[in-house]
Image (cartoon, rainbow, N blue to C red; front, side):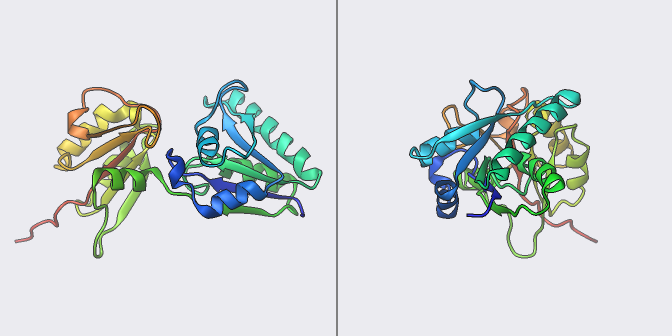
Length: 238
């Protein structure tokens, strides 16, 4: 095979949600890697691959979650390792949570590889996203008819959440906002959208938690918590 880098979405946590296409890509690759916070720590993507395909060996590449020089240095090292394997003609599958094209570490990795080796094919395999799993587990209808969806992150605060709530008929999904959950709950309450909003953590993994946002609004959640806010009724005009 010609060298290639493939971003493989392995879903939110439950190994049963890894697609057949993802399994085929993992098993066909010369090397499978997954992000981790330390060489001796099993990352979530690796744990999913282990559960779905125990026959696949996974090699860890270490990322730093903090912003700044430390994160950039870790990214440079990861890209360097990938380039070495690709230089040997390997097909490398990079396992990532959810979908590799939505809020994924893979996009930065792919950008670094593309800049150094524009001749190397880069492909992605889509994965089921956390909000889809949360909707199924909580029985939440996210969209119907001509309704629209805003997918935002609260990583740096809740300004984008407030902006998304401006249209009362738009569904809103919030990623990476666990530590801001009390503030998110307040914004939902102020917008009259708290009822029906759901939060999920560690979906499909030990310690999984699902709850109405109103029931847990007094405390933060984990980093990868997902919030779904269903559409509200259309505004009444007079």
